[in-house]
Amino acid sequence: MTSKLYHECYTHVCQARSLLQDLLELGFNTIVPAVATHSADNVPAGLAFEPPTPMMESLSELQAEVEQCRACLLHEQRNTVVFGRGNPSADLVFVGEAPGYEEDQQGLPFVGEAGQLLKRILFAMGLSPEDVYICNLIKCRPPVNRDPLTNEVAACEPYLKRQPALLKPKVIVALGRFASQTLLGVETPISRLRGHWYTYAGSALMPTFHPAYLLRSPAEKKLVWEDMKEVKKRLESAKIRQAD
Ligand code: URA
Ligand code: URA
Image (cartoon, rainbow, N blue to C red; front, side, top):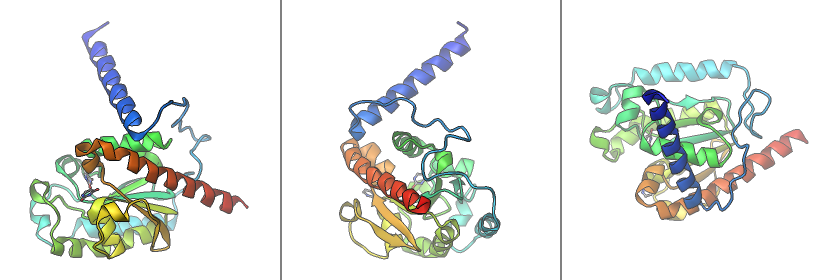
């Protein structure tokens, strides 16, 4: 075996090991094969890809506007504006907090360590990041990943309100305190908000803990998995209602 091939195999084994570790922590006891095979005729229930529509043009218009934004001081230090990624026609949208270093470098949300965990949570749901749409409350990286300031949240909030209105998903998952409290306009702690259904811009909204918090507190992954099971149920019942 060449050393390049050996290195690739080693990387895959390490990734598989950390995925299995996460699945165990999420509360899986058995692994059912054949999840997440996404050929065109085998798309997970409720997440079928639809061809581009004029709605997507409006989303790109919003993106072009956000990319010019100078409404708060975060624009001075940003490398890129992190607008969103994934399938704009998805039934499921995740809203995180703000870009970190990797996201600011690549211009894509959730591509760093927290993003790897989010990917594994999606995998446990039988999904991949391409099946959903992922964005953040704040579109520019706060310096040294500090919490967003009130004026920064206020500057970005109008964009966040327009984004789900254009995406019109069946379900929004708000990741962590900032996204949940801002979308719901409340100051209730995330530990009390999570696990309950709310409504936001015509979509069902489920707040849950942020993946970055789960990296620090892995014992809480079980609760997030409880929330994601509710999300899956909701998506499946929406699909059944649509088919009736
Ligand atoms: N944390 C977030 O909330 N969003 C990202 O895009 C990355 C980390
Ligand atoms: N604090 C946060 O800001 N988010 C969480 O998900 C948990 C604690």
